[in-house]
Length: 259
Image (tube, rainbow, N blue to C red):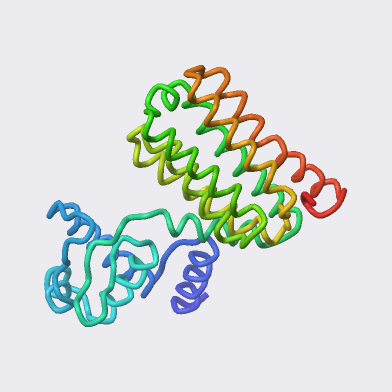
């Protein structure tokens, strides 16, 4: 085997194994260089990054390599490209995770139901697992705000789905917000967003189901007001039970995953 052929075989094997080669390896190095720059300079979301020319000089990379690296980091929300203004440290959200999980959930009829079941498990785990802390930290103002969101859901139950979904999302965001755990809050909302993207494709809920959903949310607030973590845990379980039934029906072919 010639040396050229050997190089070709090695490159092919590396690609098959997911190992970066050539141009992709250079892009990876520049990408990591930009991340190291952000860390070394203790930059925060919204802080400006050096100009493209300065990044090229600092990293010893070409403009094309820097541009490709910036595109990669932009997709991950690590950097924010504001055309005409420059490049800034991004919001560091979990948008890439949401897109990846949502795409996975939309791939096939069996996979999407399983993804939805996994998401329900994680969401319920968060809220049940932190029941004692949530109940302890939900003050009167937050409980009133949760009640107001329940009323919004009740008012929107027969109207536009987007309004109902927005109130539902805000409810769960506020539920974990008092914990002061940014990562848990972001993960909770990321999983919620994936659910909201995939569920319509499975026809997971109809307008008739909204009344049941609204009542379940009201039950959660009532349990939280009682100051009883065990009651709160039961209310959370009751909230997710109908979703599990619809998922089970979809998995066994007993109708549209839910209605």
